[in-house]
Length: 297
Image (cartoon, rainbow, N blue to C red; front, side):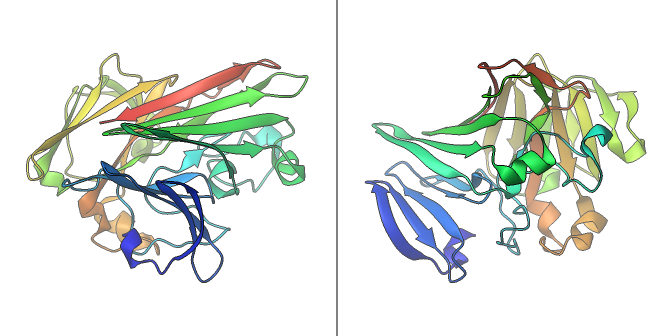
C-alpha cells in the first residue's frame, strides 16, 4: 500500500536505499533492489513492506494505516519491547501496551549493499523519555537482512550497570490471499487461549483460519509454515531466541472495531509472531546482549 503514499525524496542513503518524507514530515526508508522492494518507517523501525519481484507481497499493511508519532502502524512488523502486552504493575500505571519501541523514533546506523540484497540496522538508545517508562540503560538494534527472504534480529544490549529483564515480539503480519486458502502447520500443540482468559489448551499441530484467533503457543521445535493455495506458495517462519509464537487474527468484529483496518482487512492478513511472553522475561546482564530472531521465507 506504500504506492498510495505521497512521498518526497530527502536523501539517497545508498544506491538502493532512499530516505523519503510525507507532507507531515513522517519519514520512510524506501528500498528498491533488483530482487525486491521494501520499506521501513523510522517511527518504530517498522518494516511495512516487502515484496520479491514478480510475487505477491509477503508482508501485509492496512489500507487505512495511520502514520503519526503517537500510534503504532497497523500491519508490517511492529517491534514490541521491552514488554509484551501490558507492562508489569511494578513499573507503574497507564504504560503503553507492548512497550515503547514501536512508537519511538529510531536512527539508521548502518547500511550494507550486498550482491543478493540489503543489510540495514536501526538503533534506539535510552533517553529521558524512555527512562520515565523503564528505568534502564540499553542499546536496542533491529538488524534486517533482506534478500529473497526477511531476516530480522532484535538485539537487546544492556549498557547500564544493573541487569534488566525484557519481553518482546516481532509482531509479523503476513499477507495472505484468503483465510480459507491457508493452512498453518508445525505448531506446538500446547497454547494459551487469550480469547478464553489465557486458558491453557491442547490442540493440533495444524490450524485452519476460520474464526478469531489470539493464542500464545509454546515455542515450536519445528519451522512453522503457512500454505496458501490461491497464492500457490508456502511461507516458512523460523524463530530463535523466543519462548513462544503468537498467532492472531481479529476476524470480522475485531476488524470492524479498528479504525486503522478496513472491515474486510482480516481477509488478507494473519499474524505469526516470534515472541518472549513468559512473565519473567529474559534477563540481560550488564555489557551483554540477547537476540530475538525471525526468518520469513
